[in-house]
Structures are given as C-alpha cells and as structure tokens.
Image 1 (spheres, rainbow, N blue to C red):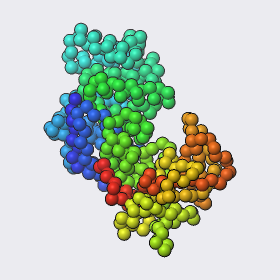
Image 2 (image 1 turned 90 degrees about the horizontal axis):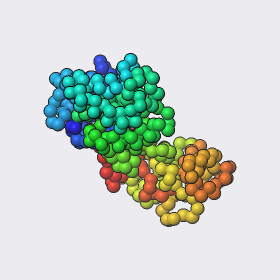
Image 3 (image 1 turned 90 degrees about the vertical axis):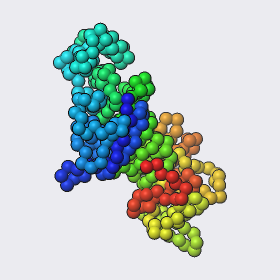
Image 4 (image 1 turned 120 degrees about the horizontal axis):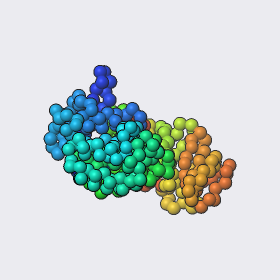
Length: 372
C-alpha cells in the first residue's frame, strides 16, 4: 500500500499535449477515480503512474520516492484492464497462481492463497477449468482476483466494468468497494462513467483535454462544481445549464437566454453574477431536483412558466421536460401532478442556483470554495 504524489506532470506525444501540468496527491489506501470523456488523458495519466509511459515534465512519487528509473515488473503494481488480459489457455487455478509462482512463493502458500481468492471471487467451482470457458462476468472476477492475489502496492483499473451487463456491473461496483476495504490497497480507477466514479471513489479527479478540472470527494464535486464543464459532466439527470447575456434594466438584472427566454436574477445568484464586472455572458445552473412546483416558498425565488413537453418515469418520480420558448428545463414531478401539454409555473431558488462565466466556464461567486 502506497501514497502517490503526481507533481506538475505533463505528457507530450510530438506536438500533441495529452496531459497538461496535472498535480494529484493520493493518500495511502485511497480509492481515486480518474474521470472524463474519451481521449481526455486519464488513461495516459494512469500509464505514467504504472511506468508504461515516460513523463515529459514533472514527477511521480511513490511514498516520496521517484520510481522513474525502476522497471515496471519491479514496481509491484496490479493491473485490471477492460479486455481482462488473462491467459485463456491456462486453467483458472494457473491464472491465479501465476504471479505468485513468478515471485517464488512456496507451493503450499500458493495453494492456500489461490483457493482463498477463488472462494472470495465465487469461482472455486471453476478452478480446474480453462479460463476460455468462463463467462464475461467470471473473466472479470478472475482478472481482479489474479491482480489482487499478489498484494500489489497499488491497484490500477482501466475501465474494468465496461464490458459487463448492467446488472452485473452494479454488483461489481459494490464488490470492488468491499475488496478495496478488505485489501487496504491504494486504487486508481479510470472511467468515463460518472455514476461509477461517484459510487466507488473516495476522491475524483475530473480531466478534460489533458487538464485537471477539479479534484475532491464525490459530494464536494457534486455540490460545488468548480466550472461549467464539471457541473455539466457530473450528475444524473444532468444539471440545467442555461446560457445567455447579462442585462441590467432599470436596476433589475436579467439573463437574456439564447432563444428568447428571460431569467430575472435575484438574491444570491444576482450577487454571484455581479461580483465580476468583466463578466457579460453567463450560464445559469440548477439541478432538476432543486426546481419546484406549486406555491412560491420565498419572495426571492424566480418564477418561470413552461409547457410540459415530456414526462419520463425515473423510479418513483417523473422527470418533466419544460419548454420555455426555445429553452428546455428538466425538473422532477414528485407528486405526479403534471399533465402533458399543460403550461405550468415553476420556481428556481437562488440559493440552489449556480453562476458560471460563459466565456471561461469558471464558477462565479465570493462564497464558492473550489476543490482543485
């Protein structure tokens, strides 16, 4: 088990910068997810941690020690990949024992650990069968067990659940978290799935176009997104992000939305937008669960009117798509009271709303404490 310090790391391939000046401090025993869209640099970051790629600039330390000159096989790192990378021509037993045999662990100890791991992964009945006979779900169990059995100092997982069916993926998310607590190992998990990151990780590093957008706990990132990209990327259903131009009319500030709608800005959200005189175009953010219907709860709450275009069942609730001129808002119809095609008032609480500079994407407001 090791701590990892990634210090101002940059990786270039010719003229292309894949990772741009990223710094992360990963504590011993933490489960950290590298989250972002395809091609953002998260796998390249993981490969540099593993030693599969050299660092162009910066340094990566394991327990304060720079291992840049250490061979990959001597770093004691466990890998789990999307394509499993198991030996399909060998039995399940031999797949599990392989790493221990390379380390010259005594045979009785190998047998004990193999059978214990097989029991832990519920594949004991498959030990004498070739790995090629396993189901996709069992192959992933074997891949995880084979890496964990050698007790690596850190565990690197590159989108290991993406090939699994939905039901088993949910099961393995829970299983991975249990395993991480049992093994006590530092884990770095690469994914483009924000649900996986939010449910598994102690901390999440969100990366876009090679740059670190935000680093913090799942709740910190969800509740306090540092910029428009993070706000849009994290959360299901997605946050409402409404873009427009700021306009002061006789002392009343409005966001003139692209498409014709107007959002009057009051209370905290007005203060956030007016805190920087250089900001003239903004993005108004609010999560669907924070929009409400019925009676106005506060005099500062912003009232809009929209037509119910779609009602979508999401568990016990319905997700309503509300059309305001050319702008669509998402909100939850908790009481199943809305009717398709009806025009209804709805309310946006300023204290639940977020302001972003549309040009730079940065979060606005003196009270915002970003976690970078």
